[in-house]
Length: 271
Length: 359
Image (cartoon, rainbow over all chains, first blue to last red; front, side, top):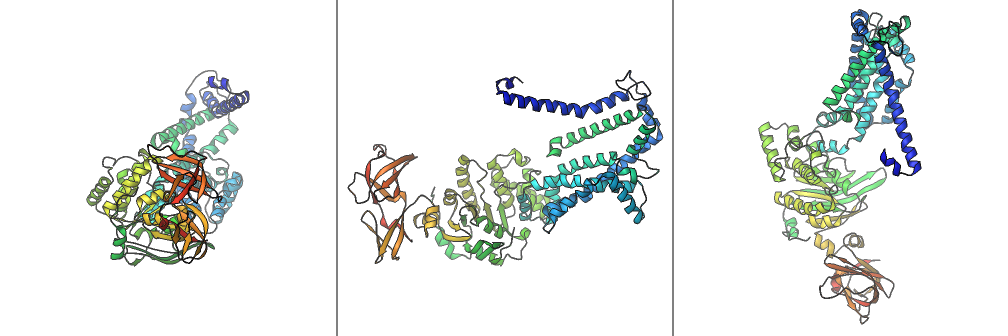
């Protein structure tokens, strides 16, 4: 901060403003999670702030309630299925959009975005009816498919932007070095896309685990995912149990991010 | 710059060419990028495609590598037509401008890439990689990643990576562009010596005339998709076939004159032989002109500006007839350079080295 004093007033004000906005957005990002975590340790049986004591009772209760544990497991399964589907469908789509030598690659890369622009509820209803037409009833599978349709664009876009920045000479070099197009894809392009695929996987998993708007119409009646279960919980009760579930989620998310950054580095994910 | 070369001109005539490019054309839409390009490259010869950006030199290189197809003409290697041979079966090795090293693979795995793709047994592959790394003096760098190497080392990895394939033709696309100026000079000499030692038939693409003069057995000067002249560096420099080549390579002075009865009068009173008649353009290199202090000679002017370039002093002389002529003189320890503004006259040292071009 000492350096700012030697700057012209307008520059100092500008930098100060940027600094203030940065601090403000950091507070916006962290505060909700912090408040939720604080509430989850409150001793009172209803949601209130600031908390008046410390207990782990609500965390114990989360794992004692069968339906909450089941919901978590269901959401975990949906998250993993969505991620897998997005990788299997999204990576080839991105390749086609960027490397495809046919008319309409631009149209395709725009069209991929459309389901993401449609309101989630509308998409959920649409998938519900479409599923009924082909005989797929609401279930973990229909829910996974519907969320995949919704979030596929994120995987495609993440992989696409990385792909566009890869030197095309790398592919030419591979071809010159005797690689067939498939060998070149397997040994050069895909390994170099890995950071983008992993970044996309983080986003799609979170969406699969946490999506409510699409899932509310497509989830199985007996396989309720966590967001639907939580919605019911906050509608009919006001115990800090909800906060404790969120606390568990926050811990899991931090663990996942730490794992990713330790294995490949967050900088690589963002690249 | 002009080290001794074992007479390339005699070699070319004897053996069948390794690479034969016959009347190759290439269009982008209706725009002609390559027009009727023909070139033969003999065993072990380094031929440079030289020209400004957009002249088609890289396009021609990419057509030889098979990265895109030519629209007309033939490309033959060892007598075999390449049109139907896919990229990954052509006996060529490309060193890219960016080197295009695989950033996720170590030096060893970069160099061994072609052998793995071909499915060579591991032991043989390892031996050949080690040999290639030794050739480019990179033994001990096996486990480094490209990002951990200097520009010069990256270039050597790129060389080793194609050398393991034992290509019939080596294609080098402006391989010195990524290096800083000081390193370039040394790397040029080293690379030429390496290629010559290995006896590799090579096509080298550059826009840098000095690089071309250093690296080549012959230079093909390109202009707007056509090859203007193919000749050894000394001949390109001393006897440029067209005014364009003369202008592109080295420094040159041009002025207008009239040719009559097989000769053209030079402004200093001498005359040069020519087959042209009528209006012509004359060209003389700055080192073919001599500055004489005073206005005794018939071709007079005043020194407008002079600068010392290492062992040479370059004078810009405003002539009485309005032209500006550049003269290069060896720097001599006793003489002071001629001062700016001094009256001088210019003599042509060897009229036979003055080129005459149609107007």
